[in-house]
Length: 152
Length: 152
DNA sequence: TTATAAAAAGACACACATATCTTTTTATAG
DNA sequence: CTATAAAAAGATATGTGTGTCTTTTTATAA
Image (tube, rainbow over all chains, first blue to last red; front, top):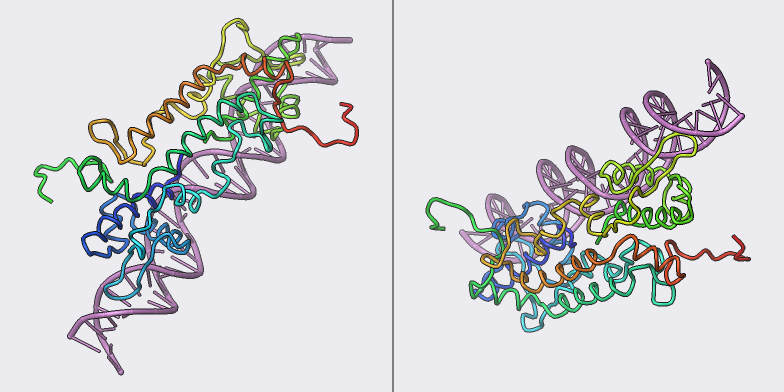
């Protein structure tokens, strides 16, 4: 469904938000470690979302990523629009170049309903709401490690 | 969502089914013309679905593609399982390697609901049901050409 | 002012999906 | 039996997503 770029972007932003609440500004290497993603590629993804203005960054010693306006909520939809492009929620599920109610593909109506429900979902979910779940230990940002002792 | 391979596969199978009803066995070049897909690649896609037994083919003069058991319905799910793989409906929307109700990602429950609704859709829709819509001129297999005279 | 730490940027590398082209196999028509 | 028509198979090409590595820029600490 969503590409790796989008997945890493969302997971990174959730991690950044959680760390920001603790007064920290994580760098991309720390982020990659904590969301279980490839370090260099995560840096590239963070460049994309930073250029798009979804998050802020500081270069140099003590720098890292952070939300300038922590109060403003950021929906997953806004992230997806940046990483997947605006067409993502407008493409025909059948692959037709043009497809609408007037000139539909054979699964148009049913597919639009599913696509709309996914749109509503990512429009409703925010980096903040996901972060809240993680902070409350109701969800995880990476697979749980299977270690001998879970001291970390 | 679905890849080009899957899109061409479904559109091809619908076209084959419609032509079969008319007593015809179309070849991949004719199919590609009528579903607006690249000829050679469509041939490759048809090799995949034929090897998987979703449709039959005959080599040689007068050959082409056809459904051996036209009465048996073929769901889009069966096609997707062949062209996208069985994992398609089991992947975490967040990108986690393992994700379930016991150890969920932050959007697990909501995402599973959307994924399930798409699963139900493609499990319910069949090549036959789509073909029926097209035959009744309620839907199209390719974008309508904008020609000076629509004589074709 | 110099050393250091961090993101940004650029150049590659690799895998896979997508696509094209050529050759081989197979069935049928004549 | 030969020519023809068709799918199957193989080789190659192209584009995009994914990922790595190196260099550059920038901010801070000392």
